[in-house]
Image (cartoon, rainbow, N blue to C red; front, side):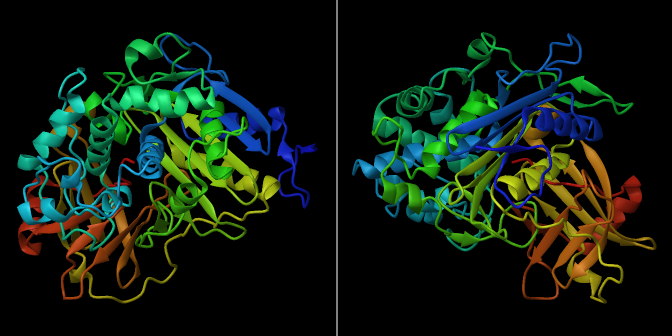
Amino acid sequence: MGRSDVPGSAARTLPTPEYLATRLGELAKRGNIPGASVAVRMGDETVVAATGVLDVEIGYPATPDSIFQIGSITKVWTATLIMQLVDEGVLDLDAPVRTYLPDFKLVDEAAAQVVTTRQLLCHTAGFEGDLFEDHGPGDDAVAKLVADLAEKAGQLFAPGEMFSYCNSGFVVLGRIIEVLTGQTWEATLRERIAVPLGLGRLATSANEAILHRVAIGHVSGPDGTAVRVPGWEMPRSNAPAGSTLTTTATDLLAFAAAHIARGLLPDGTRLLSEASALAMREPQVRVPDIEAVGGAWGLGWNLFDWVGGPIIGHDGGTMGQAAILRVAPESDVSIAILTNGGDLAVMYDLVRDVFATTADVRVPEPVVPPAEPPVVDSRFFVGRYASQAMSLDVVESEEGLELTMRTLGAAAEMIGEQVKTSKLVIRDARTLIAVEARGGQHTQYAFLGDGDRARFLHMTRALPRVGAVDAVAAHAAEQGAVGCTAGGAR
């Protein structure tokens, strides 16, 4: 199979390792990313490269066999375990969660009675999604967080009403897996995914990760340089949602290859039935047009409507680490990019280059603010929108619309309280877009509601409007607050 140093040629060709390493290095420098690893797979052939360091303090070089946290890409692994249980006939996606977890409770009892496994998989269950409380390192961590939902998981909207990204829902899925298999989520993942796929570089805790060349997460310091995060991993309670799973880009693509093959493994055994593998790619719910994610969600997979597609994938983000996985099943092509800090968004340029060469897939160009924003009553957008993890204030001043994002609760305890800024302009009657770009992309915010005030601000999560316009504006003026780019951790 031929290779090419020049992306964009008509023939389907894998990039060379030299091209990948050079391009990865260029983008890492542009995005202030300390270290990164990439793997591109076409058919049975994989090309890999790495750049930078795993830790800015020690300077240990990143290599293709280095392991990075993959964050919420873990959700597709959890969804795969759920679909295995469907294949075995022990789980019905449309049965209430209480069929399998009789003690399952939410703040809203009516919602708790009817929420289904399918709704958890496609993020339509409607309850608070960002609960990161630490319930310790024990085997009961997931069970304890699920029990905690009775007091903390308030209902944002009725189950099935809309899409809102929900980490907590995948923790519940992890608990269903534990109950139906009789062992921890981690043990089930190893037995049912890692071992059949022959994945040799995988960790689900710091104790395991230390045995490998492991990346350390970084954030930007006061002077803009990369500094270590204060801790290596998020709580085990969120493991099924993506707080702990750590692996290489190559092993991540081995997992993707099983999905490309519709669940069939090279030795003739099955990871999943063909029906379940295909069902995971079927659209379950549309997602607001905010570009940060694909236009629809399947059973675990994010679905991207790109020219030359369909494309499935997921992004991931933890404490100072972030990852991209994109898969073109019909072209048998996939790419994984793992990073340990900086601005992940710059790496979408590499996704664009690789898919144009290997799969003849065109990744849409990023949306930019309109040269002449439409005239819309801005009062529709203004207000405070909040969850337990963050608050976003949209205010209007003489300089235009501004947004302020603040981290709250357990999220603020993990990464520190953050207040960042962004000036916004109107893209259309229901969407605002950031004036300044991050990594070449302008963050967008969709506003949902039929009245004269938006009911939700949607930026992968649906954050309900909780504050009066005048009160928010007064608070912002009092505090001298300015807005922020709040892309939303995934």
